[in-house]
Structure formats: C-alpha cells, structure tokens
Length: 317
Image (cartoon, rainbow, N blue to C red; front, side, top):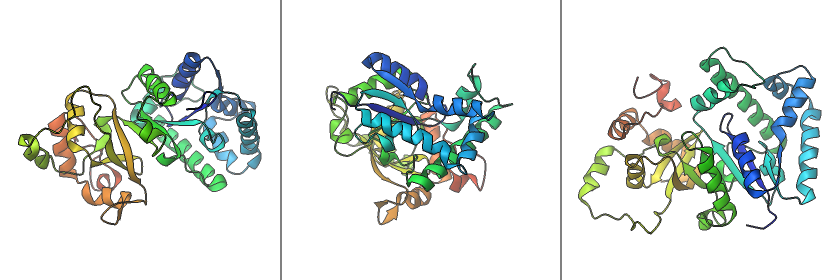
C-alpha cells in the first residue's frame, strides 16, 4: 500500500468503528476524522436524533450536500488519515477501504450499553429495530443519490466481522493489510478479503457429506503454510460456503474467531450452475442442514428470511 494512503472505515451500527478507528489512528500516528460525529452535532443543533436526521436527509439535500462537500475536500487534500464514515469509501478512491460487520443482536447490545449514547432505547428489541431502520434509511439514501450500496462487499478491500473478535485483533489485521502482509493476492488483486466469524457462516452441504470425508486423505496445509481462503457467497447480509466446508469445520472446532475468505459472488451475481448468490442460498440452505451443522459444532445460526418466514428465528428454538 502507498505510504501516504488513508484508511477509511465503514461498518454496521455497533460494529466498533469508533474503537477500531481510534486505535488505528494512534498506532499509525495520523489524524482521525469521524463523519458520524459531524452528523451527531448536526442532529443536536436541530434538536433531532440521528435517526430523525437520517430521515430528514432523505428530503433535504443540503444535509448530505454539506457532509459530502466536506469529505471531497478532505479526500483531495492528500493528507494521510483514518476516516470513520459510512460513505468515505465512495469519496476516497485510493484509500484502503475497510468494512466492519457484526451480528445485529450483538451490535444492538453494544449500542444499548454505551454510557454516552445520543439515543435511548427501552429494550434490546427496540434498539435492534431502530438501528435496522436507521441503517436502511442510510442505505436507501446513498443508493438513490449516488448509486452506492454500502451493503455491497465488493466496495471494500477488507471486511472484518467484529461479533467475537476483539478490537485489537481487528486493528492488527487492518495494519497487516495496509502494509501488504495480509493476503495481498486478495486484498490488492481480487478484493475483498473477508475475515469472517466462522460461527456466522451458513453451510450449503449436509454435515453427513463432511463426515464421509473424515477418512479421506488430509489436504490441510502444513502448520507453517497458511490455509487457502474459503470461498464464500453473500446474500442479503448472510455469508455461506461455496468452497471450504472442511476448513470451516476445522475453524469452528479449533475455536477460531475469524477465518479468511474470498468472495465468490454476492446478490445477483452468478455463483454456481447459473444461479445467483441469492437464489443459490435460498435453494441450498435448508432448516435441517442448518440444524445438523449447528448441532455438530455447538453453534446457533439464526434462520435466514426464506426459512424464518415459516417458523422460529433460530435453529435452537
């Protein structure tokens, strides 16, 4: 990566963007800018919550216009920065673009526990719902005005799941990617590199097939050689295996909090047999498959929308 390259960080609400960006700026000795702080000040000046300002911005171009002009000016300055912003990846074309993802319930719990939160919620369920509304409001606004979908993983160079990983761990990975030491063949040539929580990845293969392979020759690389990244699909916020079930199973059994992966396809992109990532996910991932996978690994995956509509929200219920 270029010596004067900036790092821009986007992420789900409650994913730890502030903590990670502060630590990164300190480690690199550069200035940190938070666009979220700018929005919160604007909301306070108008007597609004952050969600109310987001909804207001859908009707008032000046809100986004001011922040956008500011980000463009900062990007043109050439100063090396760490920028915490949900849209900086769109304006900082030459930056290392990092996206943090988190389980929605975990993210809502973190926001609910903040001592200095600008918004208050009566329960975890309310926090989760309000944050979902706020995130969707932003997504629609950015998509309508800029054609920029913040949920599309291909917008980023590095995607990290902060559900269980500690901020210090994520910072080390970001710096390694920034310095070209972390899977440069993916980060630089075929981004994004995804550092996913193995407990949040859906299988597309029956666990029985994996057990049948237990007696097959072990193709795991020697300990001094890094395992090749998994190949994952991404559909409506869910990650699923395209190639690498055995490696994923090993990561779960070893207690890993993160596993490296490349992105095979997402959304409407074709992944297997002419099927889009979304169609493949819905066709291949069934209730019994999730149940058996979770039972074998001691995990608890929530049922995705195409299954939750017909029943409870997690396989444990």
